[in-house]
Structures are given as C-alpha cells and as structure tokens.
Image 1: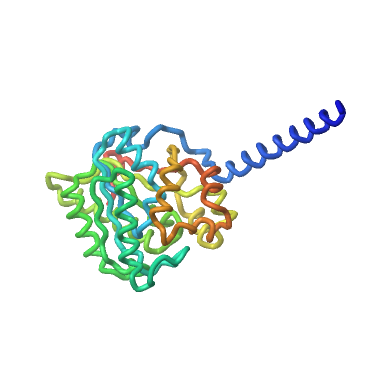
Image 2 (image 1 turned 135 degrees about the vertical axis):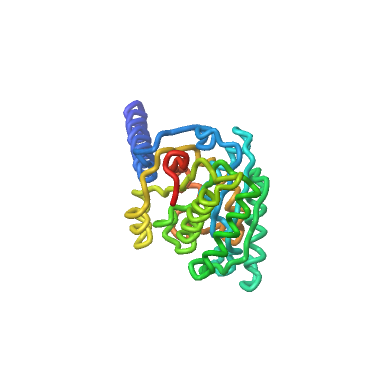
Length: 281
C-alpha cells in the first residue's frame, strides 16, 4: 500500500510539473521582453483625457484593460471613435440577418464601451473593409473636429504599418490618426493636439506561430512596446459576450477557447510616442 501511495505521489508530482511547464511555455508566446510592467499606461503618462481611434466594432477589445483602468483607477475622461459599423464581418456564431449586422455590431460596440466606463463613443458609417478607399481628407477633417471637441491629451490607436492584426482598415485609421494630429499641430489653434500617441502592439511570438501571412506582416512592421499592463481579462471575456456576433472569434481563428487564450495572454502591450519631444509631420 505504501509503495502504491508513493507511486501515486510521484505521478501527481510529474503531472503538476508538466502542467506548470506547459503553462509557462504558453505564456512565453505572449511575452514581450522590451515592455516594462505598469499598473496603467494612462496613469504612467499622467493622462486626463483619452481618445481611442479604431476601425471596427470589437477593436476596443485590444485595449479594454487600458480604458478600464484609465476610468476606474486614473479618473480620466475617455472617448472612442469606431470608423465602421462592421457590417461585412463574419458572424461566429450567427446571431442576426447579415443585412442587419451593421446595426447589431454598432450596438455591441456601444454596449461594450459603456461596460468599460467610456464616457462617449462615436460610431461612423464608413464601409467595413473599404476604409482605405474612403476620402482620406474627409476622415482626417472629421477626426480633427472630434479631437478639437474632446481635447484628448492621449490618443490610442493603431500603428499605420501593421494595424495590430494586418487589417487594411486598421492601418488606414492609424495613418488618419497621425495625419489628424499633424494637422492640429500645423493649425496652431488653442488646442494643438495630444501630448502622447499610444499604439496597441500585438505579441510577436504568438503572431509568428499562429498569425499566418498577416501575422508575419505585423511582426515585421510593428515597433517594440515599452509598456505592459494588465489586460483585465475578465473585462475581455465580458466584452466577447457583449460582442455576441463575434463571441467565438478567438476559438474560430486560433482553435483555442477564449478562456484559455486569456489564461496565457493576460497583458496588453503599448508603444508610446511623446509628441512634445517627437512631433508628427
């Protein structure tokens, strides 16, 4: 009997070691060694008014830790822009008629930003998948007008050469964001633009393994992040439930359930540009 118990203990110990090893190996896929951990990127930059500029409903899922902590920990005023209604998206699972998807996804985006404590959220109506073909001057002018009204000291968006996922809509909105900030500085009005531009950065190793051709594009074209912070994975899981038409996206794309992905990927990564020292344009 004693030998049996010893054998069971040894087997259990081996299993524990194996599980722990697999866990840390999985976490390493979502680790960015250049990033310094902080409680809040917005708090670290002493931001008081934050504007996120995105392309699609559910893009805010990449930054919900940042926005949740900006509101609940830092007391910042937070706002978002989503350039499209996401009407061309693939439903996973199907929750509505495809012709109604834009209405559904706009509502999902507004509900999710409300759950994150966001103070205001504009959803525009540029064509999903067609942002690069839209009138760029119009997009820039519209964003300039919103920024003059909101007066953010921090803007959060996409790196133009990679767009976090390689999506062309993301990349164009990253470019439009930079053009709008440069225009504000050139105009020299009462509000001259934000002090910092914060780019959401995707985990390099995971993209190299799971991201395919688009993943390689992102890896080759995005900068290294300086900051890492909690992804507030509970809010991410809540966000996917709110985005009901996209709830199974992670499992569909990566063959892993969302809870397992976020068990390993529990940080958000950011590259920050100090526009007071390094202006655009």
